[in-house]
Image (cartoon, rainbow, N blue to C red; front, side, top):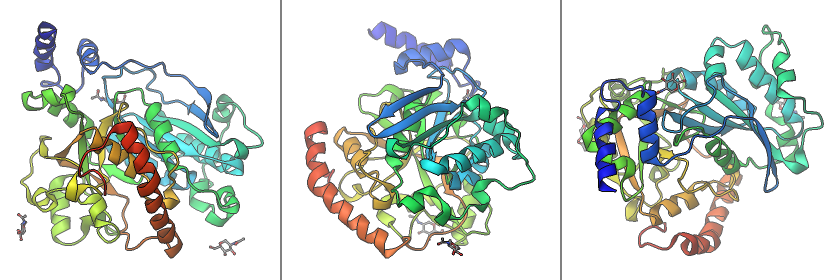
Length: 404
Ligand SMILES: *[C@@H]1O[C@H](CO)[C@@H](O)[C@H](O)[C@H]1NC(C)=O
Ligand SMILES: *[C@@H]1O[C@H](CO)[C@@H](O)[C@H](O)[C@H]1NC(C)=O
Ligand SMILES: *[C@@H]1O[C@H](CO)[C@@H](O)[C@H](O)[C@H]1NC(C)=O
């Protein structure tokens, strides 16, 4: 066993250090170390609880991938958020797995929006090359007519007309008319389960990563200090800090730009005004002040315990991390609380990265959307406390300091 490990480490020594892109043989070795399985890349319709899931309804051109070869950005949206896709891909430039919620008559504008991005947008090559689109909806809200993906893809759009996500009014959507909650965690799980790669960045589509994150990440894992974290005894995830910028500001593309924007108050830490303890995490000020380099490193190893137990970090993790709780919806908030509890109980370490981060689509949020949502959020929290955490303790065990 030790001999095999030593052998693997020897090879890992030579991996990525010279080049951030892995060659075929290195990928096989890394795949063995991670113990991940390559997945078939195919379209498949599945029933999941009360949802239909059309996995890989529209596939990316990249085709099959080795599970060890890359990081997949996994996310969820309804079509109104598709304006984020190209700005996100321009920075990410790696595979993206996107679960779209499209109940009832929201199906048509969803498909049309996707086709518009594939055919008409200036970033269409990135969209075609990198994005796997999955679609999901409750069985009770199955669209009346659904054609095959090939039929839709053969359709030629009039690119002089704006895409539905630019013109559609919220009160005209099927979802608002039927007053449906947004099943955020079903979308998160669907997108993550469809990832072809073992490493995933499970995030929200409005959060744009700094460029070159994936090559820098593999370069980091290849260096001796970090190599052991890939397969250490405690599970590790790699946290990206999140910032917001003024609506007329450009999104900073590196830490130096971010620092000057923070110092001139054009940028602030994410949700500073709404829920500071949800995103601050340990050592925020020190992180901001830290000197900058081109290399990616772990700035600090945090745990989600005691004072930090309301932290809802976004991180590069793996397809094996605990699932999101599909009983929680976006309207009810606290949608990551039970996953966070599970990770705490399982002893996860949150390694905060230093020179890469996420920036929200420009515009600083000042308050929660509505008093009703706040009310709902408080009620959900008490349900989680009383019922879900009791379950969670049974499933994952208890650990002092994990409960908020
Ligand atoms: C990840 O996939 C993209 C798209 O196929 C590719 O351009 C990129 O080089 C890959 N990254 C690594 C680290 O191999
Ligand atoms: C929908 O919203 C628009 C503007 O927000 C408003 O003018 C219109 O009257 C609304 N329509 C309905 C049916 O509520
Ligand atoms: C960060 O830098 C600012 C400005 O130079 C300084 O006022 C502050 O004390 C520093 N904070 C920490 C925690 O180092």
